[in-house]
Length: 514
Image 1 (cartoon, rainbow, N blue to C red):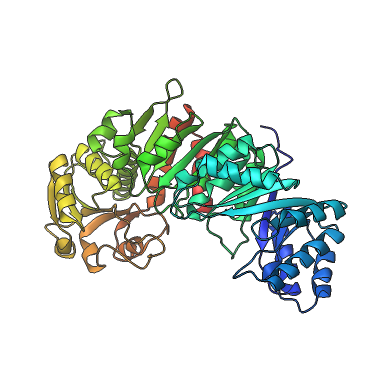
Image 2: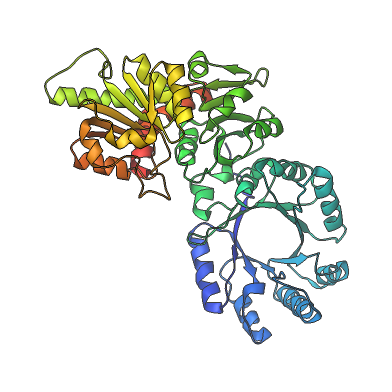
């Protein structure tokens, strides 16, 4: 893959003083920004000379923008035009004009008076209950092009990730250089996948100033390596809600580069998984991890399902078959979890002078908390190894349904702390209890953990959950969700690339960075 030298990474600086703006500019440069947008509407100045000083002392190439925060009046417009004209006079690299506020005549005046500045004509497309369509965006682009500006810019308000698809269409077909950004968490892929569709500007957020829909500046070049993304890059990602906790991008993207595979792996905040697959249906969207809460619903979206995943009733991996575009579902959670627990028990047996070729889970009382997609995979895996499985879930009916499918027992969640028919049991938490940001929670009391020989937690953010900390304190062997994560990810990577996963490399990434 060749370096895409024309990719420009920028960040928006919303500061109130010269000192704060200068410090933020320096920080942006350190974090990899090529350009900064100076949002002058946030900048407090009593005289235009203060702004002039700021622009003269800028340490990075800049965009000067001035947008309304409240009701627009004649004084505001006058100040806006004064700011834009000053930026042109001082040869600021880019001057952005909001066409909803400033008329085409002003754009023409700036174009005729500029020396080196490039003029950006921009507009904000509001989602007033109706998702943006190709026609809506096309009309906005035609209006922006009519200004004669050098570059056009669209900021689009999106309610769902599927609303981003028309943005990619516009990027591909625009006759002028187009900066496009879908606002909000569900618009994140507009920046991460923009370069695939011809975007030459990508916006990121400064560390400590997270903006929904904008990736951290540091991740753009270090994690996603967007400078290498091109039209042939195949798209992979994790379908989940929430999705911000996922560590998948930190693992799969370096693995793609390590193996020379032209792919990118991105977070996909999906509300309706069926609608997602309907909209993003081309072969370029090649494979997906499936997370909370979509693992069971995703089964119904697949054209074919691997026999193991079908018996479990949940998929955590979907591949789009290149030959016919059909979606094929798999489950790599099952073996990942069960083998992680087996290996930990075998290590414990070795320490105690015992070893056996039989699964150390066989005959054990295996207590499972959670009856969702991950819980289903673990229940079937433990049962296949000969464990006696008992399921607890906050919604008892779901526990009973899973128990019927696996031919085991279900008990009400409120009995979990008192459940102790024998010592030396195995506990597996497949619920989201204890996941960031609620990492102070645990599904079971510390006292109850004394009955367990081994405790496994599928939660891996944080790596050492409260459940695992308390299990360690009472002397149980613990298995982190990180171990399950890396094992299921290795299985996914093989499916994604139709090849071998770099096991040692991926393990090192996980245990160094997670």
